[in-house]
Amino acid sequence: MTVPIELDRRFRDAAASEGLLDVAYDLADSPVGTLLVAATGRGLCRISFTPDDALDGLAEAFGARILRVPRQLDPVRRQLDEYFEHRRTEFDLDTDLSPVPEFQRGVLTELARVPFGQCGTRSGLCTVVCVRRHLRDGCIIELQRTSTIPFTRTF
Image 1 (spheres, helix red, strand yellow):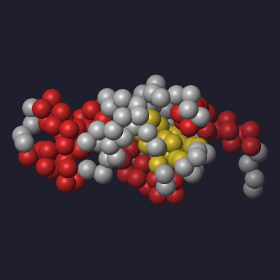
Image 2: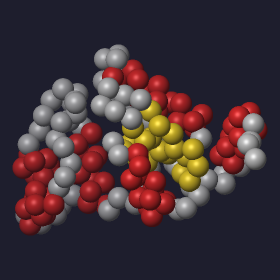
Image 3: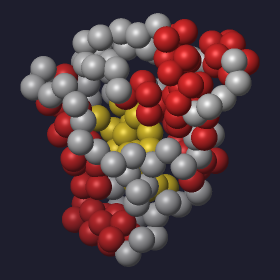
Image 4: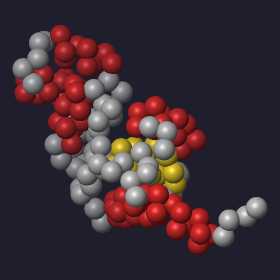
């Protein structure tokens, strides 16, 4: 049985508008390949360079009710397109970092303060995160040891 395209679109839009989804996702073409972009009701929760592997991680982090709903991700795709076309240097999107541990959320918050086109050092970022959060010196070493976050705001 084949479902008509319009009926499929209406089903997906209705599921999203009724709050029946944990995560809406779509695929976005980019100069670096196809990206999976995903959002919860709170905001953008994932941009993945490996779309095939991302859905399982989304289900583990946010819940199993995941559905491809392109309209829900229109603002994300539009801003990504503007970024890749060099017409945008900052994003205006809500984010959902709820599954990210508190310390790593602090790191991401500080990383977002690095101006576009600038690079920071791991030790500089670690020092700022640890001082602002009144953490012990050991956190700098731990962050440097375990961090996989790239420290640049450009590609």
